[in-house]
Length: 409
Image (cartoon, rainbow, N blue to C red; front, top):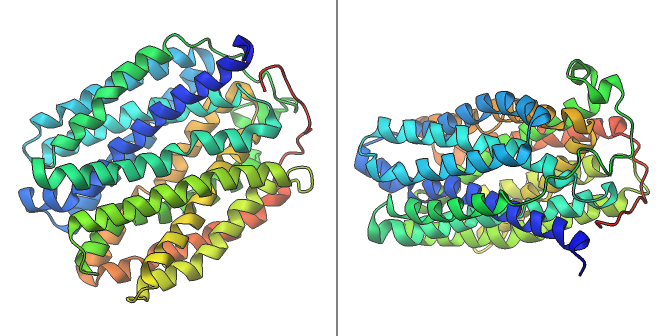
């Protein structure tokens, strides 16, 4: 393979691995929540607030990072951010109160915002438009694999070595990967984009009247509300409401997320690319269908107590995760390259503000007053809302000129 062809694949592999660590660090906390709750004598609402605070600072940091990345080296910001969040993860050793853990978690959110805001724009400039769905399918494998690895890491090590120990394991590789990314060449912005940067697509003010951007953002917000709540509370639900041990609950849900997530992420991106020549809004369509199909399956998963429960949870997780790569592809395609990081920053702010920032705390609030099973009705409603928004958004998808290949493909 020639160096020209090797470079984009090497860059994709490094950025995907760093994204993997990002999601491992987030989900380790979900796996050890009952241990943290026991040590610090916390309510369900306080535990849910840890994730809400992390995501709150993460989303507030994104709008500051995005404009910087549209003007300066994306690679340097990614490297500095990875070092920052990996260092803070190691500081978990010094968290001995709830408030110290809360501060640590919020600062990690600031560090991770640098990567999640910028890396998709870097990846989008590595490959042609008609391959973006599949490429983002690979990049966003980090969500199910990293989330599952965090569940398995925390569930395996937490009960035996204490809840802090898994964070040390999750942090160490971040420093090495940051160093490797520092040696990557930075791709030219928008080198494979086929559409011109109109005022609507290419200016900050134009975002306000860009319906392709707004529908994907609002659809993503509703989907993230559902996914965020399920990720935070499902292991606890299996443990408290369905009688599994904490270790079993984390292992079961971790395996479900990694297996279903890998298939879903790759399938969603592939299907969106496959339908693109025949359907202008293919990425919106794939995401909308997955959310719609997930609603009845999630209801079965919540109320069935027999052998059908775990298959239903697995299928619901599949439908929730199918939309990840199509939605992110639709987001990247909705705007021009020179405001892409800023647009992603605005998207991150909004979909977290209305999505997984409030959902863990709201679900904890409902669980404290009713039951965890009742709390899971909220993600079901959010899935239906997401599907409706994305079906509507199909009409606004940009008409990409497909079929363009390049030396880097």
